[in-house]
Amino acid sequence: MNVRFDFYTPSEIAKILGERLKAQRLSLNLTQATLAERSGIGVSTVARIESGQGGTLDNIIRLALALGMVNSFAELFNMAPTNIEDVIAKQNPRLRASNKS
Image (tube, rainbow, N blue to C red; front, side, top):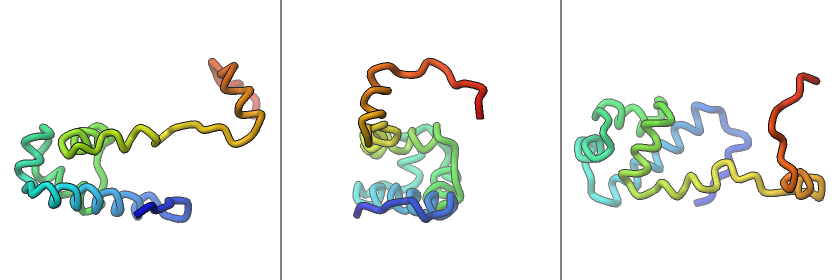
């Protein structure tokens, strides 16, 4: 299922991502304890992330690695050009931000 997150709150997104991680864990027939051991984080952290209560990016990446889902991050911040200005800018990437507002 391809869900767009445009109209979701951060809490709602965390809940959806937690549900996806849990579904993958269950499809691999892993307990939270086994996943915690494989990922190097605590069982309570696994439970908290799966329930949508959040977690650090580091812990979410550890879970994704342990569940074989890490390649899902490949497109996370892919900056695909949407117009000709983006194509030109990609050829000459910015090295720093300006102070102008």
